[in-house]
Length: 422
Image 1 (cartoon, one colour):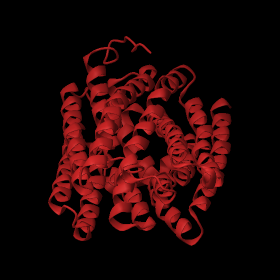
Image 2 (image 1 turned 180 degrees about the vertical axis):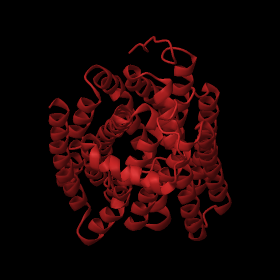
Image 3 (image 1 turned 180 degrees about the horizontal axis):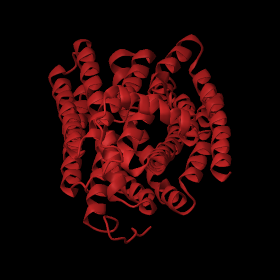
């Protein structure tokens, strides 16, 4: 998968600085992955499916909600890098504070729970500042034909680092006091986030394209512009609907670890599951990059949409056969399940970022990112709905709902393909 050679960024220093920043971020975010590490930590602290669902929901909601305000401010600004700096260095600092909290807490989990959730919420919302400037700067720095490969290289490099991180996490959780081990995990994540921030900032920011309308923009007119885009841009609207359905499939992610815990997978094996998830991400990188750049971002989204069916089906299969599995076979089965989860999460990110950049006008990319992510934000609350389903019915019911949503999403992708073709 050789990197493309074009004049601006791709194959040159800017390409690799942005890729390196993404790889460091990927490794850091894997260390605090909401589907494995954070789900396991919150389950240990609380034993509540609602708390596990809330930790996942607040991360997604915090990522999406600030983007409307940031998009408005960035669209009016000549430079978008300052917004990135605030969010990127801010989120790294939040992780450092969580590490200190867990280190001081020791095994006094009762008061640590509230402090962790407060800092995790702050981390989520500070992280949301990054998305708009990142999408805009990358969109102007990396040509369209190279973006999927850049993202694939980012996840490949990040995956290699994340495998090392998973090995460290497994060792920490297996040998040390559990909250102390988690404190060291968050400290490692913070350090990687700081490296990522420095690398991206060093790449610089291309000149901002001239605005088609130089009249002053108010926040009200900015919001009206979002409604106009939603009403007039059918491709934008259909893509948004697929994201809402995608949120229903994503609501299962934090509950795979809860399911594993319920059937006897111990906390120290979460590192193994994270490693399996990373292997899935790594193994799929070349495939996602090739599909996205050769056949188009929509074809990539359709391929990922089909893969969404696999993890919930796998979870239901494990549930059906759980009583006949010895402990080692159960761990192997869950490791295979997390390989599929890793490939899915990686493909979703590559496909979503690539397609959103593709449909956003170059001079309005911050606004489009803000509009789309703000309108998609209600889906971030679905892990709480998943917790209610798990509590009121069963964990298996959560996976069945995810299967149904994935099937409907595939139908909408087909409609989107018809719209583009005709």
